Length: 75
Length: 166
Image (cartoon, rainbow over all chains, first blue to last red; front, side, top):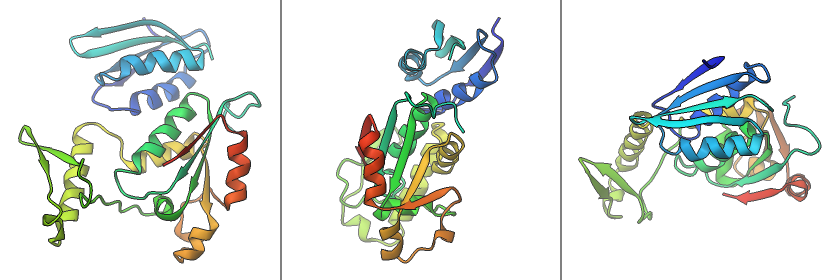
């Protein structure tokens, strides 16, 4: 169970990333944020976002068109 | 101040020269996303790009002279011949169509992205010369804008990891 959940379904680039960054600020270091999105580009973008910012992408999946990312707040 | 403004943060500058609805997207999308990835961002608005800083945005799009502009319509793509573009109201109709598409596809509005850029401490410089040239006043622009010229931009660009011209 993630500490926070962000529903970014229906939003297009770059909104899921912008909203995830904002949501991460409210997650304590070591905590997790779950992001739900429907933007197919988000799969590549959340990987790039996490690699660049140093946050950890714990899980990444696609369930019937809904992408789910579990991010550990590191940086 | 943002947590991004550290000495070892990566930085990016963009010269923004165009003020139509379509061309307004790349600089604001890149600026907000870069800021979210802890990059220090400077946007330098010059010539027609300066209108993107006006308090009230009324962005338009024109298919005129844009052979690559295809609008999705009834499962097909529709291209506007240049001659049709001479009819008054065609630009307005295209602008409405584009804004409807933007909304329908969950794409952020320029107003929304501009607000996000300001909130994430993107540095915004308005070109003083353009202000004089097109007779705008600083009061016409949104708050938080710095005025500057080419040297101000160069100082930023020389320190930046990425410099773009849009």
